[in-house]
Image (cartoon, rainbow, N blue to C red; front, side):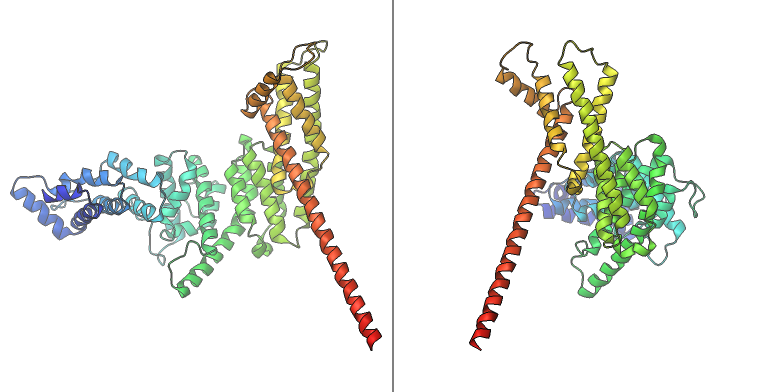
Length: 504
């Protein structure tokens, strides 16, 4: 009838109005029962049942107005769990849930849409609402709600942990459990929480770390005010102060727990990069909480990550976290500075040593009279050179002054040796084929062949060193100009004073 036509109308506002009308019927016991009774009298299926598939389909409507109306309606549909006779019903099938939840993971990621998706999950999936009254929350309720969120995310998002930010946005400032970061750290680091009858399952520990990271980033956003727009001035300032207090509590508990978080994964020899990213975030705000921080062990844990791990993100974020910590604690940062200087010296020394071994291996391979290098030894030499370059590369992004210019010659030799080896020039050939050399460079740029990544890292570091040297040079020139200008001004003042004295 008219409702079916309205739900398929070309005008998005008409479609939205029809969906809102159905939502009101799902929410009202009186309207629900009246429409169901009327349908039963004429022996037809109620439009509330007949068009529910269209409502689910409209959750993917191109119009945001119609899409949001459909999401509100399907949430009300999910909350209708009994019929007019009090019998249990299930209006939203499993396949409908999957269709609606696609909107939580798919772009665009507007907050309004994510909030509506969160309402749907709260009604259709969670056995109890996680959007509790802020005055009625307690540690046990927070724990149950956090575990419910992790179970849902693991089931419907799988290992796509980067989507946790959008899932958190759906409940931010609405689910009180998200502010209980001490409990999150407690659950992930301890075999048994102080409040829990059951420890956190191992498969939920990685999603918990991403949840903790997402919550921290939301707190940082609120302290800057970007997440509090549209509020009255008084409410804005109060919420900003509350966010700052929550962030400070999070910084203390997360920073002090860095060694425990690292120890969780030591047996697997691969520290998840999310731990390093989390440390990078909280170290920026360590200055306001210096008296509550246990500096020695977290600094040691971060330096061990940089020394022992090989993942580029972990390397970059661990040294970045130490750099942030040094800046935040200034002028009380001597321990951090010494650690960074030691990491720089060791990384550069190891890089020059491993690249030297790599160059010797390439030289021996180019000489037929030399014995062939075994594949295991070649692989080990390549791996050591690559990992040492990764560490220097991470240092260049955060602490370029600690990387000595002595590397330039070694890096240039490594690049040249790799190109020469890949060009396959024949023995006794006087001139190298330019086309062959171009092909060699293209293969390296595409990361093809053994050692290609070494060249790419070496080139990147080489140019970063050059740019840093150029920047230092221009800084020196600016300082020289300023000093010269000051000297000229002083000389002019002295001349004026002398002239005034002569005139007097």
